[in-house]
Length: 364
Image: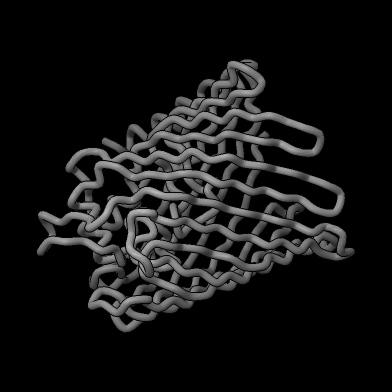
């Protein structure tokens, strides 16, 4: 039933475009393969996905932004605890689907399934949709844009439930308010945000799955589990780019979050590293090097990225992306090396490799 609802949302959005020409309609075909090597968890997954990225402005006040499609996977995965994060699945998915309202030039509202990738911190929240509302107040001054960004959401989604188990004990809550500054000069560009976050009404099923992924949880077995602390604190992210080199741009990317209710040694997560991007070749090359650490109770493990190992993990990653804009083709390799911060019976050192190829088709 959920699959038909998602598919209906996508096609009903496209049907609106028959009356007026959409701003964009892009098809995305992706092939990817992941390999997980560890003492406890092993997986080999191959996947195909076909998605539509649809944007349409109904008038000067209302627009539609939707991204979704179908995902097919095959392969094998060990059944021990966190290895289930990589078990193959086949599904229709809605990665983002929102009505955008702009009642005033300085105010933008989004309602619907809101992708959380805008936090730029996969350790804090992976790129997945939360049902909710987002409000952005903006103010421009010369080369600067200042924003007050607020979201109120229900952080449960179909994709995570398929991989890790269904959530049927009521809805949790997520709140985030942040201030953002964006500047773009001839030599430097900067994007920086600082905010407050809180999770509320986290149920025992989320607690049980998060325990297997690194969080501190009390209880025995798959029922009557409870987080030993609440999740409330601060989050920040930064992208600083120097553009005056002849052949490339050099960026520094960083993101961090602190759970003020967690004990010392379990409260902090961060990811930081340089990014090199070529700018003169037909193929654009992008190299990312990152070091990261996500302490046991810095965030809710259930909503954190599987590639960085959820929580109670530290490690390094390297990624190379090659993009041919003329052919609308992108391919790359990402590697992750992680190990537990505090030893437990659920987590061991892991190496993850991910190969991907993506082709875009502009239908307009």
